[in-house]
Image 1 (tube, rainbow, N blue to C red):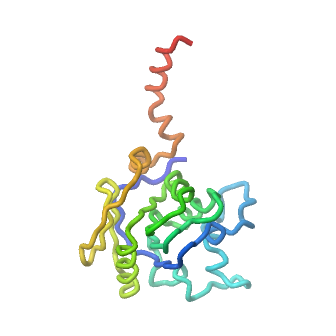
Image 2: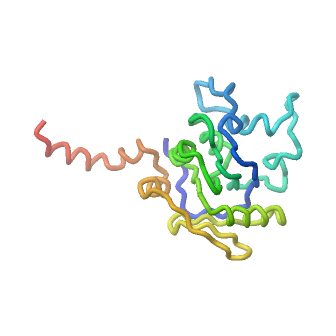
Image 3: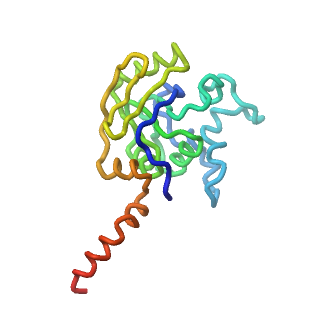
Length: 199
């Protein structure tokens, strides 16, 4: 499935400093029975966002109006741990987020995000703390994530840090490709190569 191309993203951010956020919190297991990719935005952090009667929890960052419309989430260490469910990455994207920043990610969650158009940016613990402090002091704090130059910047102060990303995944993000889109894009090259084979 093609998704939005990722070049440079400038946005405010939701702060979620809780460490070890696992995929069962990101999208609870009871919502994995769906046969279509629908309502993953509604059920994103379902048990943390809503009370049992379905009313929003006013103190949860994703429900606060001051952060509404943010395209970035700054999460605590070891974000996306737990089971390997791809639905967790789907729910991040469907909620409207295009980037998650953390000082550490679970590997499978990180790769799932890259496969669906969400950029996981791993920064140092010190820089993550700088981002959290800035957002807490001013909810309208703006962050720029520059994928071509692999840099995340706190706009108000200019504080920045570089991040690492696999070259193949970077190219796919820049072009809005998943793995199938990439193969379709080089279909002519694959066909030409196949003609050189003796079978």
